[in-house]
Length: 60
Image 1 (cartoon, rainbow, N blue to C red):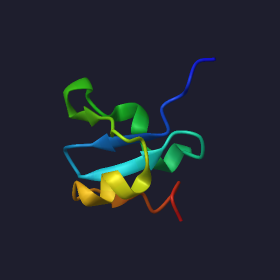
Image 2: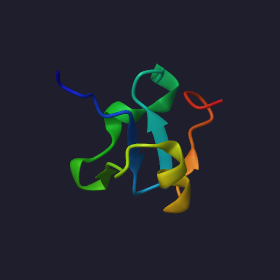
Image 3: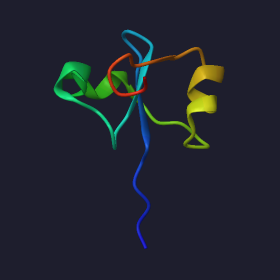
């Protein structure tokens, strides 16, 4: 079984998105490759611990 990544951070604006619930307003498609960050463990708490803010569109 292949696990899907759940959270993706944008280092340019320090916002984290949930890939399963993202919407067009997230603008995740425009994040540059060098600005993408994944979290280990892949949980929201880890992203927040690393100073990322939850996206107001996909992580209400």
